[in-house]
Amino acid sequence: MAYSVPPLPYDYNALEPHIDEQTMRFHHDKHHQAYVDKANGALEGTQWDGKPIEEVLQDLGSLPEDKRTPVRNNGGGHYNHSLFWEWMAPDAGGEPDGALQSAIESAFGSFDEFKAKFKDAGVNRFGSGWAWLVHDGSGLAVVSTANQDNPISDGKTPLLGVDVWEHSYYLKYQNRRPDYIDAWWNVVNWSKVAEGFERAGG
Image 1 (cartoon, rainbow, N blue to C red):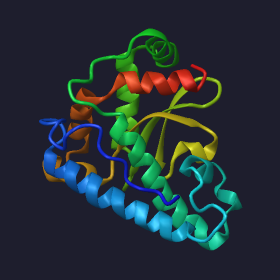
Image 2 (image 1 turned 135 degrees about the vertical axis):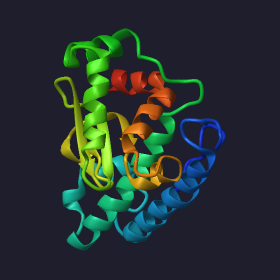
Image 3 (image 1 turned 90 degrees about the horizontal axis):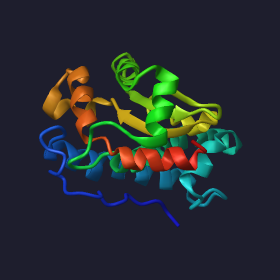
């Protein structure tokens, strides 16, 4: 079964004023669709055609060399964005609670220190990429990746990620990536993050 772009779980304008409607339309309908089309094209007719994208990304080394980069870039783009839409929600933001809150405080000292470290990872990612909160098998960590690389390819479980490609913020924030990340905290869907944390063995 070929990959497809999942529908947004909310309206295009639902994240206003933090993430603008026009950006959401371009980002979801154009950018994500392009990743899906190219990933499908790269895997068509191979034994990986239609396999869950997370499985493919966990085992990139087994792909033929000529498929590895297009799948890493475009399969990664599809997987990253499928997660990203779910990690945001209208009327969200605030702070996590329960086990996730305790784990963040234990790993980083406080929620504010976590936010500062996460923002730093996003702001200082040179060029295009992502900042992530991951479970690395022993606990929580903040990492960043280039382009559409996903921590799952390094054996880590992504729990939350922010897209710092310019297409995710330039229409509203121009070159002000720090302002975009500050605003993005207002739409983080902590209940979805907590679900992933629990599945990862939180």
